[in-house]
Length: 138
Image (cartoon, rainbow, N blue to C red; front, side, top):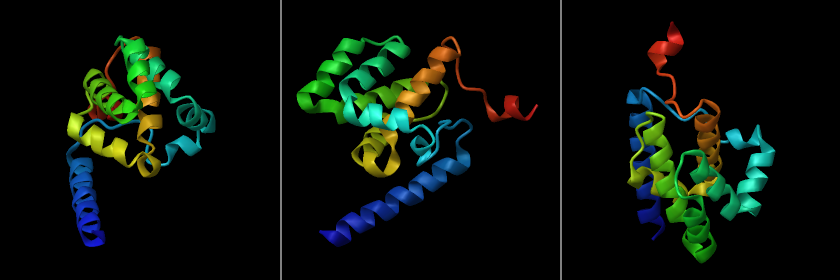
């Protein structure tokens, strides 16, 4: 079993590195970035229902539905779908599968914190996409 998990993680890491090289837009908060915002980390850890509801409301989704899913034990699914949706709204290529995989390793990837952070940025920017690297270089 250990060999299988280790092989899976190696493949996952290699695919993640490939994606990093070709992704034009990325999440603003990097791995471990929630250490810079400990309040967000505590909020998503201690009040996941409210954090996911806030995130869904920020991107004009049905917040209470996401809250209910999280409360009923489907928080991984809720954060996974929310991650894909916020990625789509901010022009960040994230598939549902990638988002769900990141959610499964949330304690290592800080995925829920990163997703909620992105939804907040989306709301702050008035519902606009993330700036592309071309726009940032100019």
